[in-house]
Amino acid sequence: KKHIADVKDFSSEDPEVIEAFRIKYLGKKGLLNDFFKALKDVPKEEKRAFGQQVNELKIAASDKVQTLREGLQESRHRENLFGDLTRPGEPLELGARHPISIVRNRIIDIFSRIGFTVSEGPEIEDDWHNFTALNLPEYHPARDMQDTFFVQTDPDILLRTHTSSVQVRYMEEHKPPIRTISPGRVYRNEAISARSHCFFHQVEGLYIDKNVSFADLKQTLQYFTTALFGKSKIRLRPSYFPFTEPSAEVDVYWGLETETDYRMTKGTGWLEIMGCGMVDPNVLDNCGIDSSEYSGFAFGMGIDRIALLLYQISDIRLLSENDLRFLKQFKSVL
Ligand code: PHE
Image (cartoon, rainbow, N blue to C red; front, side, top):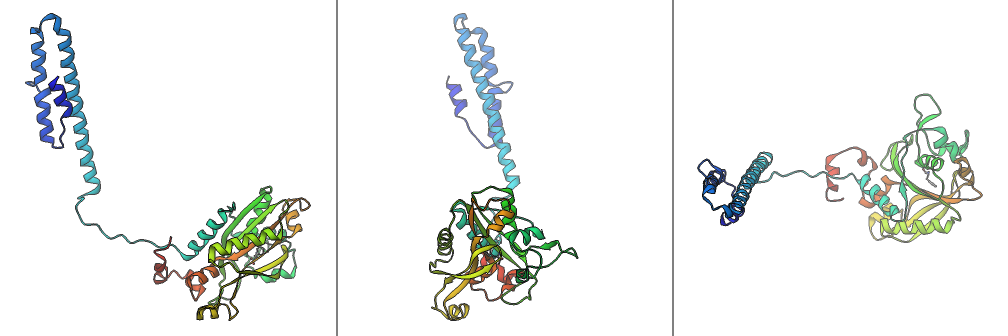
């Protein structure tokens, strides 16, 4: 019994000690063989009990040797994997997230908290999803609001000018209630300058259900601007979009505390950040949603300009030049 306890208590990570242990118990001249030999001299009535004990000792000893050997193998394996664990660490360069991604992720996060899903669609679009379904029939003058890149010479295939096209696709595939935002890259044939580029990024939002009102739109925008900018004073200016009626442009009151504020807001304190409106009933019907039953609102904003604002970046071109000196500055930001 004492031997069994000894065997169970034994432990070592030294291969030589483990081998000595094995020889002591399981070797040719080991204790176990002695016990087996002694068995024949044990009185008959004790034989059975003694035999059982010896067997138990044998099993305990061979189990122990096996587990200790496995342990050895594993630590050897670990050493091979990691090398010398006492070596000093090598500095690992951390990457940085792109400011567009940071802002897009924040916007997604803010809207997902009030139940909006994220939807995506193709950057190469057809006329229907980018224009016609959105109440912009051929020869509609408002098509000129967004100078379009066509793919080759086919006037039906183009680079999407806004992610409203994704909302058309979404409405064609889903029944209300709909709550979704569509982030993505869009293209417009505009002169490149510090303020605008021929491609940029948008997040557009769509909410459709029974009895959705302009008040719902306003409250949603209020929630959003407070969450993103920490500024809660907004105003809606009447505007025009072919796909919404009524339409408005949203300004955030940025204040006039610094010289930058002055410059950014042209001395008024107000900054335009997005377009919005109640989805035109024609658009709902075009996308297979009954406009006598449902109503909704939509909004759209440019991520790039918001990134310029939030990080006080002076030139939109910096966002696509991939200059490491610029990108590295966003290292600490998740
Ligand atoms: N699609 C518009 C644009 O790209 C933005 C917008 C979306 C306006 C939804 C109103 C409603 O400029």
